[in-house]
Amino acid sequence: MTSTPLALVTGASSGIGTAIAHALGPTHRLLLGGRDKTALDAVAAAVPDAAPWQVDLTDPTKVAEAVENITELDVLVHSAGIAALGSIEQAGVEDWRASFEINVTAVAELTRQLLPALRAAHGHVVVINSGAGYNARPGWGPYAASKFALRAFADALRAEEEPAGLRVTSVYPGRTATPMQQAIVADEGRDYDPDRFLRPESVAHAVAQAVTATPDAHPTEITLRPMA
Image (cartoon, rainbow, N blue to C red; front, top):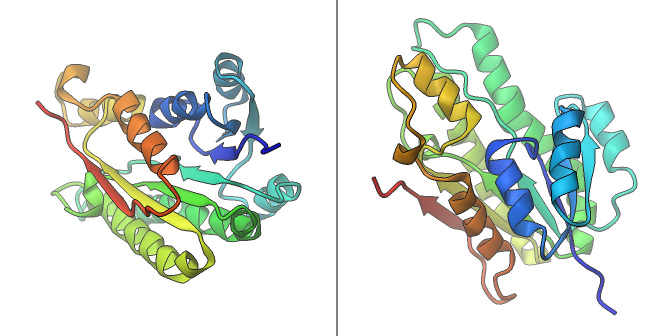
């Protein structure tokens, strides 16, 4: 009997990550990654066969301990991230360091530590990037730079691991109605209207389609933009 595939979703406590957990719930066992145990417990209670996976992704030692018993992993979704905005003049060194540590380095290290489990399952890595991974706007320097780097990471991983049967998909959503987006809009001094943005569920649907693609297909990049 074939076992239900296992997926690990980071950033699962809110926004796009939560939506992805719900989208994969009918087809996968889930590990819900994040720092907020209360929020993770609430998502796990609402999704079949899901368990919290609370870990600080910026601590390699804690990550190593958390992945120690994961011997096969079918899907790894990187949805955790931060948006540190500001002009080049305004952004300090800590803004740059935090952007790269969380949006790039933590992604690379978690993937590296899980590669044996992903290879064992001929698995699939999904990287939630951003439209900022292709276009750098004024005031978005640290965030866009980290997302450009994240695109390079996913491209390199794909080139290295595709011969071993590993699929890597980068997803580039436009601005999405999440708590992070609400904070960004507030920083921009505008009124927040979620109807102007993509729904998290729309991004999650695209992720679910990618990870359930037939074995002959490698969905390398998915770009989504709001209709409005």
